[in-house]
Image (cartoon, rainbow, N blue to C red; front, side):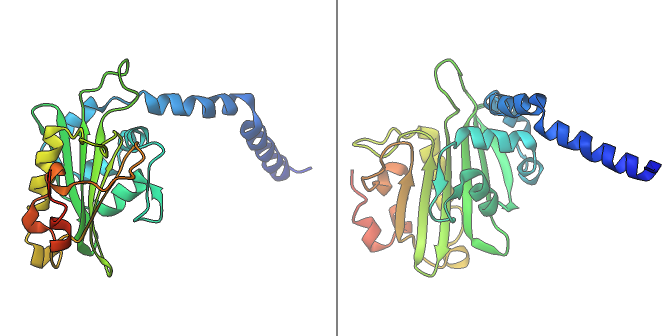
Length: 226
């Protein structure tokens, strides 16, 4: 056996042993624990900074997987929320932190600014009380069927009286009004749905979520009652 063949075979054997080794198995088992240890307070560093600096950050991916574990987006091929948020924030705007607590980021899809998203995360998080930080993703998805508003939350919101954080409600209201409808969305919102950790069987009341009536189509305004 010549030296070249010896080195190739030796490298392949080492790689095979590493992939099958108990050490790699143990490391794979530790990975979820590392992701669960991510605390959202580090998001405060991105106050008034371009969102692009955050989207490719490894901690951001781990935090999103932690916050929205088990939730998928039916309006985006049932992909996990991390990938959905990345798609609808791929043309990012500026992120901000309000009251030294609430992280808000806005952006839209590349080459299709009519579809856009707002990410909201509460950085006040006590692991001894809650399994994950409170977080929500609002998406305006413009399709041939109409203009859909989706709110994906990792907290139960759809019930008799939505337990919607005041800050999320205000930011959702301002975000919906932040761009001229004719230029960016082509008209009024026609559909509204909420995905959360509850059954989600009941139709949400737009007004309870801060959705302005003037941005809703008549069919959606009819449910704008409390």
